[in-house]
Image 1 (cartoon, rainbow, N blue to C red):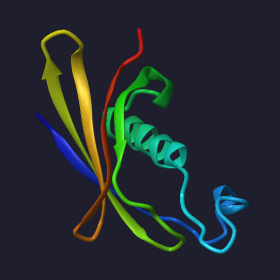
Image 2: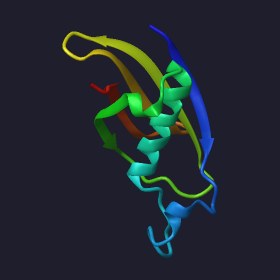
Image 3: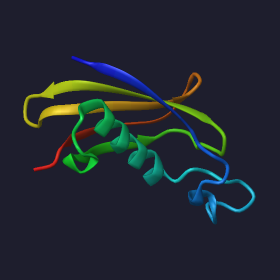
Length: 104
């Protein structure tokens, strides 16, 4: 199965930081997931709306200016069919992981 890595540096001025949280800004999980969907679109050549989030786990907060590496891998699941498994890392620290399945 294919695999690809994508990098994203979260700009300090990203609108998600407004109010989340004052004094210690962190990236909301939904922003991390949205970026995973956009990378799936680039990886597969199918619209980001072609995918649903099957599962997601968050392990560590992410702040402004951090360099994220998204690793996406194709997998075949016996019930769901084709899925994309992803992990998100900052250096050696895993910050999130999950899977995407095709929208039906």
